[in-house]
Amino acid sequence: MVEIAFSDFWYWLIVCAVVCYFIGCFNFAVLISHIKKSDIRKVGSGNPGTMNMTRTFGLKIGAINFFSDIIKGGLPAVIAWIIFKNYIFAGSSAVGVSVSDFMRYYCGLWVIIGHIFPVTMKFKGGKGIASTMGLFSFALPCEVWWYFPICVVFLFGVLGYIAVTEWGSMGSLIGVTGLSIFQTVLFVTRYSSDLMNPWVIALLMIILLINVLTWAAHRKNIYKLLAGEEHRTSVKKKKKRFQNPDN
Picture 1: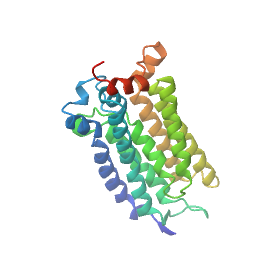
Picture 2: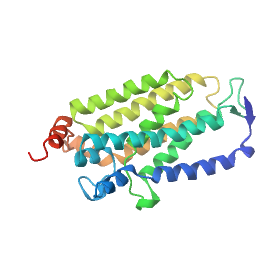
Picture 3: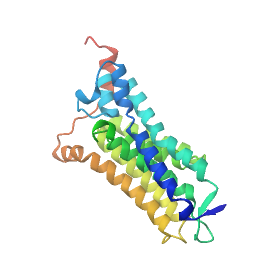
Picture 4: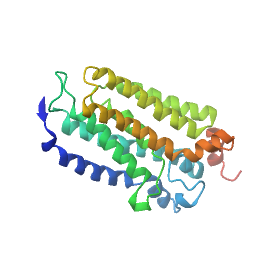
């Protein structure tokens, strides 16, 4: 492992923030809806995200949008791991704080910020759930492959919960929160002897901030859930509707 000091590293923070923010600004829902001769921002809930795409265009298009956003959130984390996997922060303990541990989530954070607040769409974007799940699903498996099956099982568990309960927003928030708790526990365990290291604290704060952003983006849905006014997303009805468009 090669030690790297902040003085030799700071410019990476700026470059990665800018690049990842603009990656996040690219909205697949808007692109796909334009291909379908529509604008997802003007139909349904107006939200350019997976749920509105599913309600508007059906399960197949919704799934394409969902997994596109997952890749958007996860790929920058994998690239950050490739670039920084052989570096540790200078001044760390004997264990060494991995630069890639921090940078994977740092890059993911900026993708999510770009997705929720895109300058290209007057700062009115999606809610960041799929991109966040992509970050959490790719960030760990790129270093330990058997984390991937765990994330996949959890991901399909969330989709199953949404299919059964028809509560899309609640299932999404449960998914993001569950994955973030799992990864927070892992890092607290990994750096148990160095928890006061500024980079470890920053890493944990980034994971917390990602949760705050996604929950805040769903604040209207949360109010509706508490008031019993949230619209359900029925997988069976959507499937039947698009299989029999004349009915």
